[in-house]
Structure formats: structure tokens, C-alpha cells
Length: 308
Image (cartoon, rainbow, N blue to C red; front, side):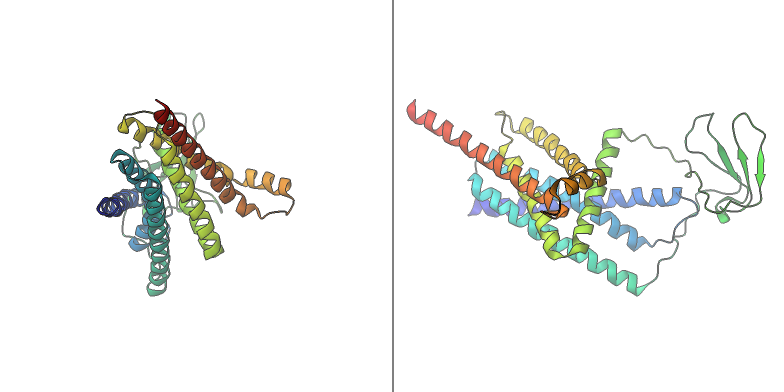
């Protein structure tokens, strides 16, 4: 029992640390994204914090499952019991924090209306462009961020400068130029985590049953996948393989829930099954296959050891 108490503690600590660290970094990223968009939307610091926490919750769920099961295997825990404990903890933490964040969001919206956070990313003569390419159209805001839809000068390559008293109806502005050297694989990871967070929110809005079915099947699939990844005798190598596998699950989730795939599955099923239930069933199916594969490998090794 002492071993499993350590496992519970490890899961809890890793979940909290990843959640707080990722939420802090995501909050800073959202602040920069907010500052880059003109005209700036009405946002409160609390709203950005809740949005960042939702994003971090997805990352904390994935990472804590992988770290906990990897630790259990490295320490020689009874695998089936370790998986059950990690699954229960993942469901409790995910459901509990998700409900808390949604109630907090509702309470904060009712307590105070959204208002613009005081931040001015540029003064008069601010240059806006979609890229640093010299052949890109540049918009010069003559009054800066004080009046982003006011007078401007548009510089189109190869054409004379164009002066406009005000922006046309429905026109959009390029983002405020900020340096961004983030590698693409990190950007894609952040996008898939955001999509996962939005999908969980969508399932939560559909009802507690839909939310529980989706999160439960996803957690079951992740636990089974982490259990099956034992290709080498090196724990660190298995951990990196697990990270790649979990990254693949995020990609698979985005693929299955894309509008095009949802439409294809709906046409194929022809109302035999709700389309929203397809992805959870796929997660459950592959999770069961992975567990069967792992158990068969274990039984075959045990039989081999008994014979020799």
C-alpha cells in the first residue's frame, strides 16, 4: 500500500506542477496574442487566466498519466493496479478541475463585465504587416493604437501610397509585429492542446454524460497506451517513446473530430450511431486491443520463463 500511496502522491504533484507551469506560460502567450490584435477585444485578466488554465488542464492530464505509469513500471509496481489508480485519479482531477474552472468562469462573468486590459503595444505611426517580407503590404496607423480603425496609410509594393480617412467596414488589420521564433513542432503541439481543450468544453456543454464518456475513453486509451510502451529495457527510452505516442494521440483526436471526418462518418453510419460517440468508441476499442496485446506478451514471456 505504501508504494501505491507514493504513486498517488507522484500523480498529484506532477499534475499540479504541470498545470501551474503550463497555465502561467499560456497566460503570457494569450496576453501577447491579445496585444497583437487590433482593435483589441474586451478581455479581463481573469478571463485570460481561466482560458490558460483550460489549455494547461489538457497538458497536465496527458503528462501526469505518462509520468505516473512510467514511474510505476520503473519501480516494479503491479501493473494492473497501477493503471486503475492512475485512471481513477485522472478522471477525478480532470472532472473536478474542469467543473471548477467552468463555475469560476460563470461567476467571474456575472460579477464584473469584460473590460480592456490597459496595454498599448504601439504609438502613432505604428507599422503593421503580416510578415517581415519586403514585398508584404504595410499599414501605417497614423494615430496608433488609440484609434486603430482611424486614418491610415497603406503601402502596397509597386504602387503609390494610399491614404484612408478610416478603415472600410469589415476590414481586418495585420497583427502587431512581435518576434516569434518558436519551432513549428511546439506551435503544432500548442494548437492541438487548444483544440483538445475546446473539444472538452464542447462535450461539457453537451452534458455531463457526454463529457464523462469522452474523457473516460480518452484517459483509458492513454493509460493502455502507456502500459503497452515497453519496447526496451531503458526507462528513459520508453518515456520518450511514450511522449511521441501521446503526441500521436493528440493528432488522432484532432483528425477524428475535424468537420470533414465527422461528415464522412455521419454519412457512413446513416444515423445508426451518433457521430459524437464514434471517437470515444475508437478510443475504447484501441485501448482494449493494447491491453490484450500487453497481457498476451506478458503471458508468453511467463510461459517461456517457466519452460526454461
